[in-house]
Image (cartoon, rainbow, N blue to C red; front, side, top):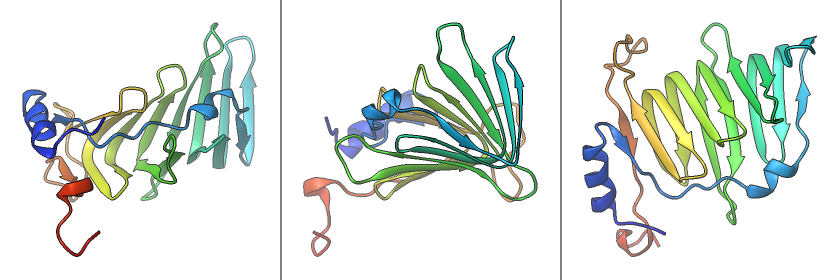
Length: 185
């Protein structure tokens, strides 16, 4: 399941700013858990299956936690939900989810986070950062796919870099297993 750092970096160069990070499969039991949402206000358009939550929003489903100032949740005819979490000012929306068969978590933050329960994908826009097991990825756009164990990070061509950013993708990948330096085991 683990590939060498060299093969991961080679695959990333072929994908033009995309790379496969260390495996980070989401807790599978989360899908069968109810969704609990807390907020200061809520409005419901039941006909179109759109729920808007505002004010210190916290969505919890099993180990998945998404926080933001505003969360818009839409439900398709198939019952799967999509959510868009946003914030105002300098704060960032956040998500956190436990990795399958591990005590580690995947954490992410950005100005806007879109989460699709069908595909188990989180898309993070502007000032995006995802961490997992000591690894960290930063970029203007990050797509985290729990099902395929991949990240895609880019500057989102055509968009301006976030303030204070030079628009480059940044990654820190920690040594795994036998690749750890002496004294860090």
